[in-house]
Image 1: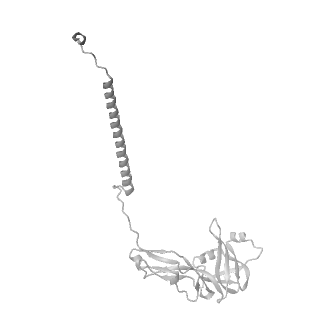
Image 2 (image 1 turned 90 degrees about the vertical axis):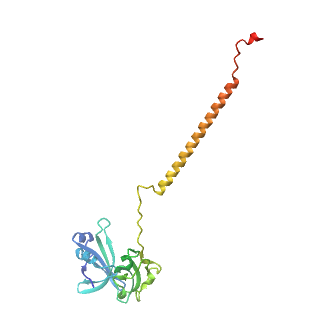
Length: 244
C-alpha cells in the first residue's frame, strides 16, 4: 500500500504561505473521526499522484499513527493546473463507500490484430460496497475479442460490490477497420458531374431561347417586307396614254 508522510497544520498557518514553501494544505476526515488539518510535501505528493488512482487506499503516516485513507478530492489551480489542496477520507474496512474505479485493458484483442479498432467508451465504473473490497483498478482481459465483439457493464463481475453504472452501457467495442476511399482527382466527382450536367442543360436552354428569338425576328422581318410590297403603288407604263 502506498505511503505518504503528513503533519498537522496549525490554524494560524496560511495556506498560501505553505504553498510558497513547497507544501500543500490538506484535510483528513471520515464518518467515524474528527477532521484534522494537514500539510504535505508537495513534491512527494505529486510523485504519489503518478502511482495511484482515486480508488487506491493509502497509508497516511501522521505522527506515530497510520491511517488507511482514500484520496477523496484534489483541488487544482485553474491557471497552472497544479494541485493546491487535498482531501483524505478515512473509513473502516467494513464501511460502505461509493467509488469510481478506473478501467484498463489487458492484452491485444484478436480483432485488433486482424485490423480492427478498439474503441473504449468508459474510463471508470462507479461501484458501492465495503472499503476493503474496493479494487484499485478494474482490469479487463480483451485478448479474445474479435471484430464486432463488445463488453457491457452487465458483463462485469465485481464480486460483492454493487455496480451503480447502468448495466446496458458499453464499456468497449472492437470495430471493423475503416475503409479507405481513393479519389481520382483527374476525374470529376459526382458533384462536379451533376454541376456539369446542370451547366450543359442551362447552355442548351439558352441556345434554344436564342434560336427561337432569331427565328421570331426573321419571321417579323419577312412579314414587314411583304407588307411593304403590298402597299407600294405600281409605276405607270410608258406610252400608256397614247394607246387609248
